[in-house]
Amino acid sequence: MICIAHECEPYGHLMVNGRPMTDAQIGRLVGVSEKEAKKLVVELLDAGVCARDEQGAIFSRRMVRDEDLRERRASGGKAGSDHGSKGASHGAKGGRPKKEKTPQETPLYDDTRGVINPPKKPPPSSSSSVNPLSSSSLRSEEEPPPGSAKPKTSTFSAWLKTVRESGQKPVSGYGPVWDYAGRAGIPAEWIELAWLRFRDRYERDEKAKRKRYTDWRRVFLNAVEGNWLGLWCWSERDQAFRLTTTGMQAENALRGAA
Image (cartoon, rainbow, N blue to C red; front, side, top):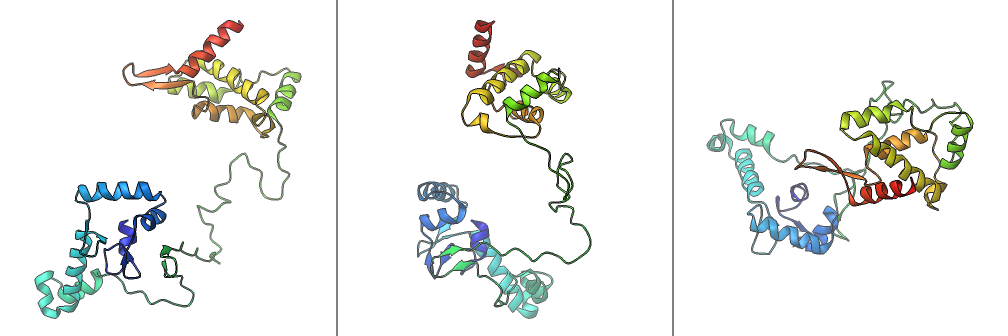
């Protein structure tokens, strides 16, 4: 809301087209419902974070004070030293920059709808230097370089069949998942329980069994790290992991099957 108020006139006020913003408009700008926006505004007003002016517009007292101080510095000449040792020059530097709109610039507010337009992305640089955050630099180590053949994907059932036919174990020898369990303090038997639930999901669930991946062991590791199956949770009292209701049900079912 502070960022929005920074772009409004008067400065620091939530206004559009000269009128106070409604809860619905504020909600659209910050990405919440009108009901949620109204609730949050009330909390901010009660906490003294913001206030309403005589028109009913929400404003930040701090932003209004700072703007008044900057304007005094910038327009006071030598007298501006009363508001700062550098006087007018400091006010000119410290005040809000006045941006001259160009035909290519998209205004923040759409006067017809009273909403914020997303800023345009800058054009790609023509520099030959490599951007460290470019998509090429963020490419996974396992992803093949451009132009090479992509690794084949397969369903879980097809991958599991291939693994068994080759005489390998699906996850017993997959070091990363056991290393993670040891570091996180997750019992080894729960990893086995997670594998059985993971296998059950991707072999029986109609939607899940159509999923295709290149590395199913890595998918399982992600499931363990993210606790996708919801089998365990952290206990502050015990300072250790414990099985959830879902985990205990899965454990009972495993014991019954055994």
